[in-house]
Length: 152
Length: 287
Image (cartoon, rainbow over all chains, first blue to last red; front, side, top):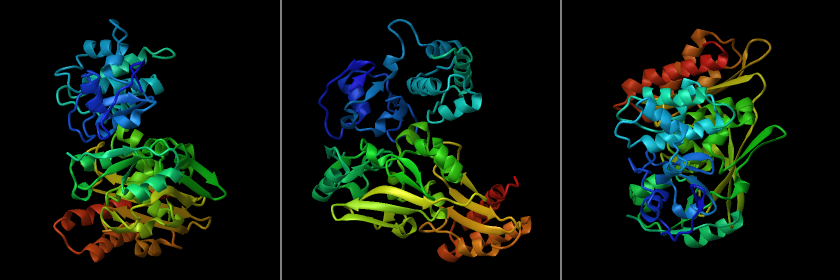
């Protein structure tokens, strides 16, 4: 599989979840486990351009897939516009939901570069945040959207 | 923790063979099965292996042929929601798909998986029941096609054989004059299991009379069904608020006929009546 644009080959147990392999075999601990049952979105990653809960995906089924985790969002030292906006708008408090939120936001903007607030709310409806109350998150994503030219 | 093996067939035929030999469980999107495995549900205690069929592209399609629509079992909720064909010909099915889970769940969860899981609160099932949908099951013994409504035996149970794969769902397209509506009642706007839901279709002829009426509620019967007694009083009459109110009352009465008075009846009776009322008015075109 490809993870953050790097080809990876790894042996996995047949029942290992993608989140387990990302965190334990590949040391990509940015992806968090909040519930393990697909209800909080903290484990969100992007697989072949679709955001999914990595706690519900078997690693073995990822052969040939392209996976993006939060570690793949920034370009070396240069933060992704979404990351800049989250900081600017105080959309990060404890930070536990943030990786998943950013990837759901990226997923949205990749398909709809200028979303409305309602569209943003639907796009992040699978990512629970206990700290912010979501307004700052929506503001951040809306701002990045408003600045979008052709692609992000 | 349940430790099981992983098999990934390359074709449907191979999947059927492996399923018959291995007595494993089919894994599609995983949004139900993975949760059940984690919860160590009793029915999965002896799970030996999963058969990952998610990559079988030949089971992922939405197409129209003559006056029928055919949907492959691996079509995801997201694909159903976004399909222009489904939005045009069976809008309440695309609406229902959009209410399930979250974007992450909709990107993985499949139509076949939802049907086989047979939750009484499933959102895709009421529209399909209203559409009189059929399903196609395949195994090493061949293929069989049967009405969707006939597979449900009790909540979370179907009579699908353990070596069968749900490969296709199909239904006859509703007439041009028929409009559909779907309402889901949940504790929140996303990531909510339906407390109750309802799918309706209403077709009004040139003479202004109702010529088509289908009402399929969810989470009110032990197995999904249409409410024929409510549909009947609507047919061949002009739609009015009173008539719709009458039909809606029959829906709640039918719920009590079939399930008796329970702790939840005091809540469910007026609410399913109201959901039916709103859905029928939406389909009628009166908001």
